[in-house]
Length: 280
Ligand code: AMP
Ligand code: MN
Ligand code: MN
Ligand code: MN
Image (cartoon, rainbow, N blue to C red; front, side):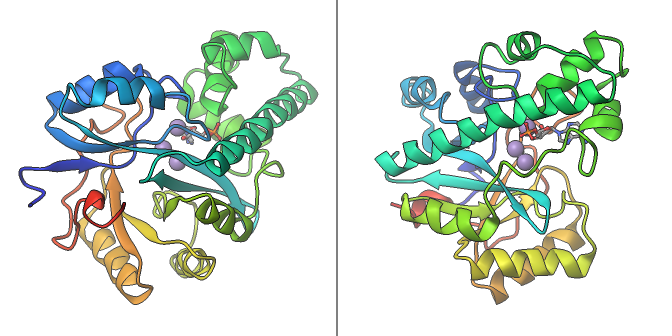
């Protein structure tokens, strides 16, 4: 099987977290883009999986069930792509409950911090932005735009919500070194998400990937959305040295120019193989 006629994308979001498309719309769009195997990886939730499961077979899509898991390393928010190739275990659902609780308490903390900065949002309006689910930072951004506090999502993150800003509340997440054993004992295959997206020097990025591998991490997102070939080559090299499997994905959130479509990530190294070939 070659990836040329079997396109895979292991990182995508639906309305179950901060994506614009419902799981049905997302899988339909992905199938139109030629995706044959995908992972639905909403932030810290499995809420979209039941619907995704119900449409995957009709669309001839091999679905991997997962979530993008939030944790911290050296005070920085880090994301893991956790996949359950054998389906969701009871422990996986416990992990989800833990993350959901952490997200609700973080939401209250963000509201408090914004209030101290003179910006008064209510939990109800932020939850409404999230379609009734637990809100993430993009839902706070939408409220900040609606209230005229910022002009767009980029500015919301630059001024208030992004790394190091007041809305970047991290103390609710597990440490990377505690999260990985928990996820792995719950049956997950874990990749470090978008290693190039963190604001890190090159040497600190290497230390993050080493810490991830040392704590039991199994895979590296060698390609996330758009990146250049030199970046891919350096990640590939690290994956080899640390014996990490290769994962990849678009990190699709919404149709439009801001975000690569399903499958529209940078060129994959030839060492990439469909994850279904060695998982389960
Ligand atoms: P959360 O998981 O609630 O902490 O929100 C993180 C999400 O916010 C990411 O997955 C992105 O979808 C979005 N995001 C993060 N940083 C930015 C940024 N600088 N500009 C726009 N969106 C961002
Ligand atoms: Mn997101
Ligand atoms: Mn992420
Ligand atoms: Mn993501």
